Image 1 (cartoon, rainbow, N blue to C red):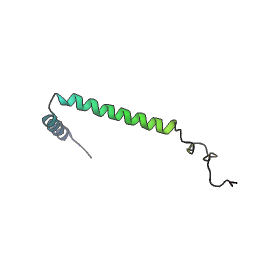
Image 2 (image 1 turned 30 degrees about the vertical axis):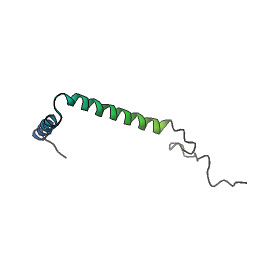
Image 3 (image 1 turned 45 degrees about the vertical axis):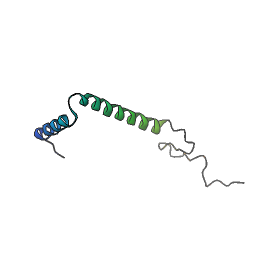
Length: 73
């Protein structure tokens, strides 16, 4: 998608008309907080997983704890 200056200006004017000048900072703040929470959740999910079945993808010899290939009694 290639947006030029005129298209971006038109989108900004429409957003300003829809939400008004007073609501725009609140809307931007809410979007920023949502993005921050999403990034934080993605970071926590990737590095600090408490799932014992999770495997470190960088370790080629890693296997899940309850691997089904082990014989059970």
